[in-house]
Image 1 (spheres, rainbow, N blue to C red):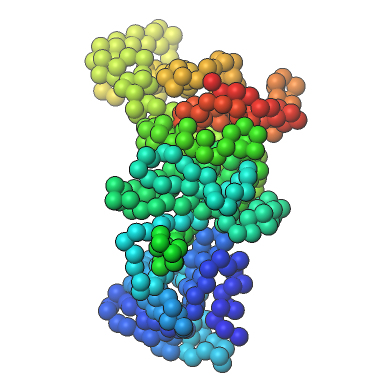
Image 2: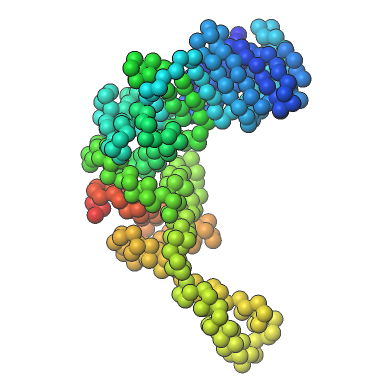
Length: 454
């Protein structure tokens, strides 16, 4: 039995390393150890230490560095280390005790370096339309060579993911280093591509490692593993790369507008929330609440980036010229109706603390309409009212409109209402990233359609 046997039972291993090294604590103490480190297919990075001195258990670990047994790789990882458990009843194969940690990143490298480098970012759960081992080129930056390609055993992996609704690496985004781009900018570009692919595929696409290779001979010199947020496969694609357009065309068409609107509309958080609202492991009502939150994110971003758009009158003008006059009128009228002082104060406040600011705020439905007008999305006001009604019922009562009065509801089921909400949000996000073309409208559960967004 080895240390790896104690760890691999916690997940399917993607990469693994064994060897000897040194643990460094915040108190500047050093402890020799044996280690086993791995990254699972879901992206989690774990490292286990076999240690002769149990004193390290009472100290804060700052850093670890070591070498594999064959000396071919050196490893380094820094805190924070999230302790899983300590196992004092170590088997006779080990010495001392062993302890297991989660860590956020792990750097694995050889001594050789290269100035001319190629980066390969491993991405999870992306389903390719065509298997082209040479990859598809992405023309999003004129002076940067980017392509997306399948990995070995792709077909077996994607079938396994779809059957189990699991997580695994299915492809890599490959980028040649360029003097025009710092590595931080390359990371940002890969992140952007992953968010766009996630939106198109309706499932979380995430990079969890990158490999650094020599361009001349494809020699691997470094791997960096990241414990990043991944999610199980969801079969809810929005863009059909098999039928409608190649992956490269979708990315090339949408990348620049996505990058321009990303901050103003908080697109990353919105796409993330939309993906999790599609996830099938939650109750339908909870998924519906998440959809309501997605629109709240967009509307809040729209308000914050459009001066006074959320108000009927500019706030300063309302406070100085209108609010007090409204208060006096309402106060007098309520007194005429013989409403008690306490009730009046509860309703509209008092002269020193007027409670009428909400009267100056535009309605949620009106803000949706204004946002649609600004981003250039054609809207049906009836659909906006339906979404607003669904959102109100979900947020305040925890159920869909169709669950309260199924006879009067236009939706055949709560699931149909849920799909209607998804479809409306899909159209908003596709418009925000500048997409033009066919997308899948799932608002009819029994008959998904391929429609054109212009």
